[in-house]
Length: 442
Image (cartoon, rainbow, N blue to C red; front, side, top):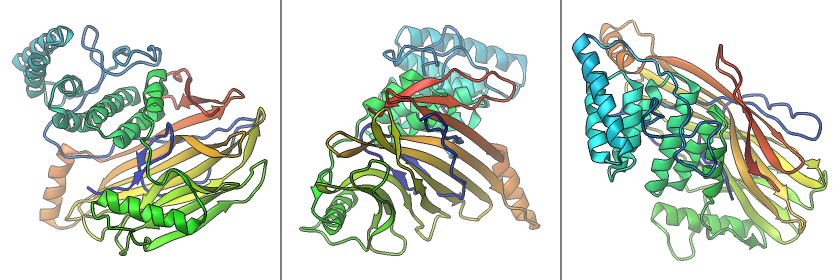
């Protein structure tokens, strides 16, 4: 299922997303910036399911809000995960026995045996997000990382609470790191932070600095930057040629003029390969005393004309602020993903709203050290059809993936020391989780 990828510089959050028409969040007063947002998991059809925190006595999976930032295996308190009743006392016993054995094996570090026991538990109760979650966690300690990733995807579909989803996203981030996919890892760490701010997750995200890219340098002109992007994108596609060709689209689509202490301007650049269906990425470019420099990647437009995919990105606004002698620019942007199955019976839509933070240094250079997913709305809907065959097909799809409509919000505030304080929206009927500190901007 093709999607657009958002990549940001330094310790950034990378997200796959799709543009919407949300109104910009109003900044907080007293020299601080705040925003809110929503996040949820996309539907996926896989053979196995996910990794989350174990019950008491089980293996550690994702850290709780109080976990030590230096302990990647720190565990959160047990979270209840909704599960359909297991038919029959025999199957309930099989499930309990298998889970107990699996946890003993996991604690002993015997991961193959733990995987086998968690598989038996999942077979006894296929609707148990807990069994699938711990299966995914155990698989993450084996060589079968591809299956661990698939299991995590299913666990996200089954998990009920935002805290549990946050733990699974953290686990998936760890798996993606092991697979050598830092962008996907940043994506999942970012979603975990939206669902539940956590110091350990924030530290894991901050440690995932993007590798240097050929275009991480100053250019004399915007045309030179476009030429470099053309070569870089061609290399990523595996069709690089000597010298490269200018992208079919490479144009400035927005700007913050020199204001509020900025020694230059931030430009929004859209660039992509030739063809109406090609992906076109949005980037932030700093135009300063040394020339032009690409400082962050945002979202992308992508409509391949097939597969039911239609993704788009919109940069809403850029705002210059000053705090404690520092100049920084929050950049609000939204992306919207639409995907439907081949028959058009099932439709998945997501609206992800982000804030990318850019900071001007004393030498008037600019970097963008963090991007936060601050609002997320996900929905899965089905076609209302009068055709009997279509209704039967939809009924089968709904058994596996019931329709849903989910929102999540993350508020933020920048403190005078440059740290970003994060506050997740409380779940209904539960107290608000404690705030946590994200990356430092200066």
